[in-house]
Amino acid sequence: MIVTIDGVAASGKSSVSSGVARALGVPYVSSGLLYRAAALLALEAGAALEDEAAVLVLLEGSGLRLEPLAEGNRVWAGGRELTPDLHSTRVDKGVSAVASLPGVRAWVDAQLRALPQPFVAEGRDMGTNVFPHAQAKFYLTASPRVRAERRARERPEDIPAIEAALTKRDEADRRQISPAVDALVIDTGPLDLQGVIEVILSALPEHEAGRTS
Ligand SMILES: Nc1ncnc2c1ncn2[C@@H]1O[C@H](COP(=O)(O)OP(=O)(O)O)[C@@H](O)[C@H]1O
Ligand SMILES: Nc1ccn([C@H]2C[C@H](O)[C@@H](COP(=O)(O)OP(=O)(O)O)O2)c(=O)n1
Image 1: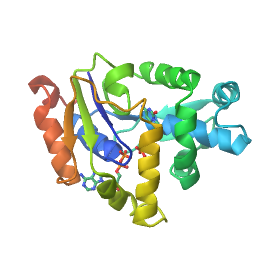
Image 2: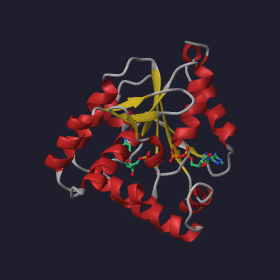
Image 3: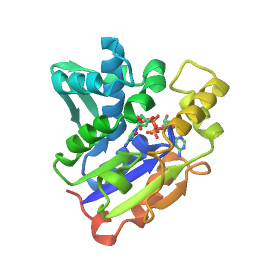
């Protein structure tokens, strides 16, 4: 069983996926963390973010690994945990360039497809490209202002600066961002976190919603 939850930046994908995964008793898989890790490795190595060959060498050589847990995903490069460094402003700024490299996308897709099922997968293209045969698909949206207000609780910048950066990243990610034709689109603006989780759980096919493992 795979449930996909895609959406724009800071729409609530990881918090909602974690809640849905815990309710189902399965892990969730944050694809964005692998793109963030690729950007971090490139930034730390001083590689150009557009240099596909250099980024792929870093990915292959670093022992990069996603640990998908229901309570929160962790990313490792060999024995070093990268997770606390993946949500910095500099990674926010660099990640779209790395994520637009076809070879990097193929590398991430292969990591995701090798993970043991069942799980909830979240990102941009989980329902369209990576898991087109998923049993249930969702797509989260919210206005840039609402998303910036939420993210301002986690970032040092003020709301207008965060809103501008989110809008810029939406534009840079546009090629990866579009709901699957069979996804349920949810505007999370008027809902709290639990409200979004409940909409998703109530929309799942009966046998998926009832499963605990
Ligand atoms: N429906 C919601 N209502 C209020 N806050 C939310 C909602 N969804 C997410 N949040 C908060 O918004 C922030 C961004 O959510 P996150 O799950 O990190 O989004 P994404 O994975 O899409 O970037 C988090 O602080 C989260 O708790
Ligand atoms: N499946 C995915 C997931 C993320 N990405 C890219 C696009 C995003 O700008 C970055 C970071 O994704 P992430 O989901 O962590 O970002 P937000 O939490 O939405 O801010 O990676 C992608 O291209 N495809």
